[in-house]
Image 1: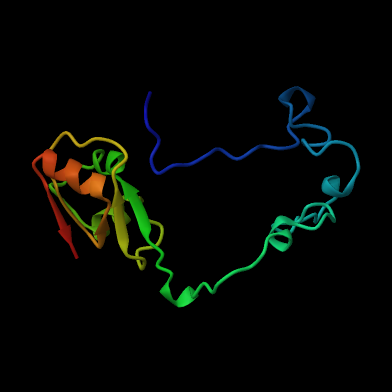
Image 2: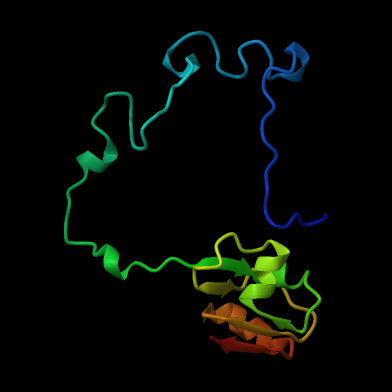
Length: 141
C-alpha cells in the first residue's frame, strides 16, 4: 500500500445525483435542525442536556502561558525524502510543515533505512533511538 503524505482525506462531494449516495438531501436526512442551512453545533453541546464539561467538577489552574505547541513530523515522512540533512526548511519546502513558525518535533512512527542527519527542536525518545540505530544523527536546534 502506498502511503499518502502529507496526510489528506478527500472531501465529500454532495448533490451529485441519487446514485452517488450523496444526492437529494445530501446526507442530511429529512428536515430537523441539522438539515437546515447555516447549522453549526457548538463544541460540547449535548442537545440541551447539561454537558460533560459542566457536570464534572473543576479543580486547579491550567496556565496557558506554559503551553507549547509543536509542528509534528514522523519518521515515515522523513524516510520519503532524499537529502542527507533534514531541516525545518527542507520539510517546509516539501509541504510536510504547514506552520514553520512553530518549533519542530520529530516522532518515532515508521522506520528509517538510511543514515540521515535530522535537525529539530525536539525528538521523542523512540525517534532519536531509530535515527541513531540507522546510523544518523539527531541534532537539537
